[in-house]
Length: 400
Image (tube, rainbow, N blue to C red):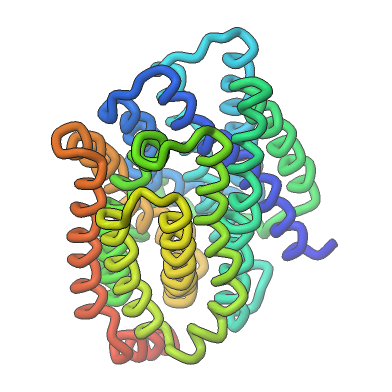
C-alpha cells in the first residue's frame, strides 16, 4: 500500500468517526432543549478550538513528525466517541457533557486537519495537489458524510449512543492504518516554539493572495456557521423531519461533494483559480439566500444543499491548493493553521449569532443574514482574487 493510498484510507476511517460524533451531537441536544440559543451552544463551543488552538497546533505540526500528530488527533477523537457511547449506555446525556465532547472532538479535528493537509505535499507532486485535495475532501464531506448521516439516523433508532460505538471502531481503524504511514522527520529548530507562531502569520498576512482568501473565508465561515447551528431545528420545526429524514437530508447535501469531485479538476483548469473562486462565491450568495425564501419542501432544500456543497467543494480545493502552492514546506503547518485560526475562528461567533437571530426573528432570518454576509465575501473575492493576483503570486513563489 503506497503512502498516498494509506493516507486516503486513514482519511476515510477518521472522517467516519468524526462525522458520526459531529452529526449526532446537535440531534442529542434537541432531545434536551428546543431553545435555539442553547442548541447553538453546541456549535459555539464546538467551533471554539479553531480560534483557541489553531496557531499552537501549527507549531506542533511543523515541530513534530506529522504522522505522529495525526495519530494523536485520532486518539483524542476515540476518547470523545467513547464518552458519548458511555453516556448513551448510562442514559447520562446532558448539555454540559455535549459541550465538553464538542470541544474535545473539534480540538482533535484542529490537529488532524492541519497534519493531514501538511502531509499531502509529502506524498504527491505539486501538479497533483488539486486532484489530491479534491479526493480527500470528497472522502471527508462526500463519500463519508453521504453515508454517515442516514446511518446515524437509523442507529439512533437502536439507541441514542449507538452511533458513537461505530465511531469508536472507525477511530481505532484509523489508528491502526496510521502505523504504516510514517512521515518525514520535522526540521530541527533551536527557536522557542512561541516564536514560531508569528512566522506562519507573517507569511499568511504578508502574501496578498492568501490574505484575501483568508478574509473571504472568515466572512463565509461566519455566515455558514450561523446556518449550520440552526439547521437541525430548521429540519425539525420547518421541514418536520425525524432523525432518519434529517440524516437523509444531510446525505443529499453532502452528495454534492461527490458530484463536484468528478468535475472540479476540469472546472479549475478551464476557469482558472481566480474565476473558479469568484463563481463559487457568487453561487454561495444565491444558494444561502434561497433557503430563506423557499417553501418548506424537504426535496427543494435537499437540491439547493446539493448545489451549495458542490460549489463549496470547488472553492475549498482552490483555497487549500493555493496555500500549499505559495507556502514554503517548513512553514506549511503554521500557515494552514493560521488560516484556520483567522478564518474558521469566526465560526463560534457565527453559531452564536445564528442562535440569537433565530430566537429573536425566527429561523428563516438566519439565512437572510447569511446571504448578506456571503455577499460581502463575494465583494472581497472579486477585489482580491483576480487572475493578475494569482499570476503575481506564482512569480513570487518561482523566485523564492
